[in-house]
Length: 167
Image (tube, rainbow, N blue to C red):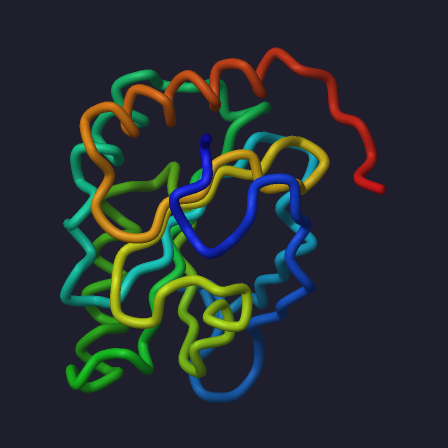
């Protein structure tokens, strides 16, 4: 099984838009929509700020593969509401992280919007979407070494699979 999380493999989560007030969306203040999770293989980390390095082994394994940008995108969506750290401090840290990791797009979720998908509120969750926007891998919390291997395998398989529109 490739589903260790609440977001089921095979599902297409309902649309979420992060934009507008409350400093929501990308670091450059442009909006973000889950509709963007198509056309490429997408890896989405959903994290509470204090747990941002929980899955650093998985993050580093993905970085080491240097997947082609035309077929692969990684996202770090920060669950700002789950932390007692003031939002301006989180925003500053996110901006620094964005500069350190230019290939990952950082997005601010000030209202726990992705918790509606079943992602854990105070954790570091990792979800892989295929080119059609369907969940193909889902883990809540820390990935085991075996799950990190599976993660890389799932990405590789899906990179080589043509995009098929989700039904």
